[in-house]
Length: 305
Image (cartoon, rainbow, N blue to C red):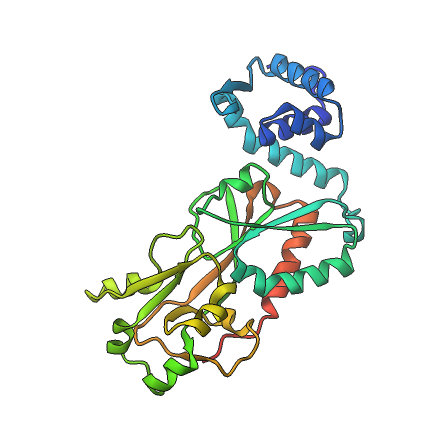
């Protein structure tokens, strides 16, 4: 590699190109023209003696050499920023966009609190919430999200995580069905009734199905819906059971038409984590934002039955 004339701007350009994999988009992120970005790419190719970005059927892709640079480059930039600006971080000066990925469950619980907190402490910061689908933790690698809020586990070593909160499960139904079943929900009734499942992708099984299968049992999933927001209207319209994390029901308007019962099977608590890329672990802004999310989640009322 030719390291002559390689500076921090070159490192930033390389980081953006590796993340965006698109010269025009990289130029917009850097705030420079496309020709200037193309010249930067040409210099980087010369310095690394590698094409770095190559055309594929799906657009531009990374070469093998470029793939090995993603982590070290991001880590070097993080360390350089910490070295150059060790005591200058002030959330009031944040003017970037922060993207949270999650589902409506996590957003219903955390977005009101974090949005209010950021509006006060970092008024120039822009907050964006996107749907986390398919367990695609690669959105952290590609810079499409800064944080992921999820109960899905990732084993990727390049991601950091911390438990935000845990939650018990309850079975929710309409009051009409609850009166018919009585105060306790029996396993026999549980298995004989229709069930609903919240599934963003419209397929797959839930925690209940896994627990039942361990006992040689099955339930009938008669309805799959893409989010928890639909629950109240669905339950008002038909006799059906949904077994869900308790806290999500607490976010619905109080209604005498809804009733909750303990599930007649043992279920593990749902564990909700915050994930972020290891390359951002020491970034001062990232560290501060994580702390805000930790504090908002810690303020959530504990699940009760």
